[in-house]
Length: 138
Length: 58
Image (cartoon, rainbow over all chains, first blue to last red; front, side, top):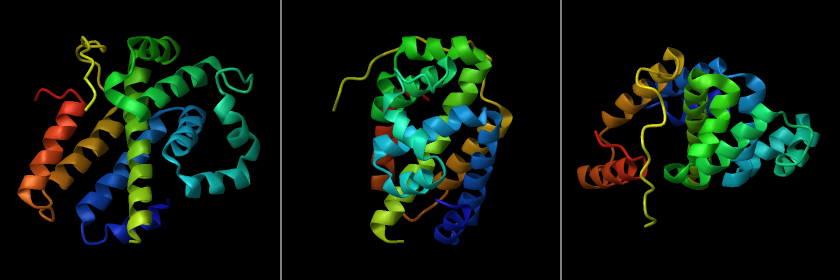
């Protein structure tokens, strides 16, 4: 979903629109490659076909390999750690494991883990909002 | 509803996400809370459900 979509849908609540953009800008704190693989994995788990169709145009191999992240040599240790946490986060955030958090912390440090979790939340929120709006036809 | 797993704190006190992330998230939450489009009862039910799901004790 584009920033223009958020502007259009949230045009009557500019304060919310501003905050949504601010949040999205903040995700630049996290290494782009890490967040991108997780963004795509979130899309797969949520069934965000619109985002995946877009991604397949530019990153077809990555999208095809992503379901195999536990074993594919394409993904770094840091990416695997973040993908494992991402899956738990999306499926049941309250049950995310200490082990998965520790693995991300081992790769990114504690500050990096805190940043990653917040960026992941923003990434997931944006997709859920976009999908809901699509289903509502707004 | 599934049982909530109770965790001990998993991040050192004083460690927070980068200001660029926290600032956006806080502004978003504040702006949404100030909206009045949804009736108060539904808003409160959702708020409590979210607090339970995210183990928020505040």
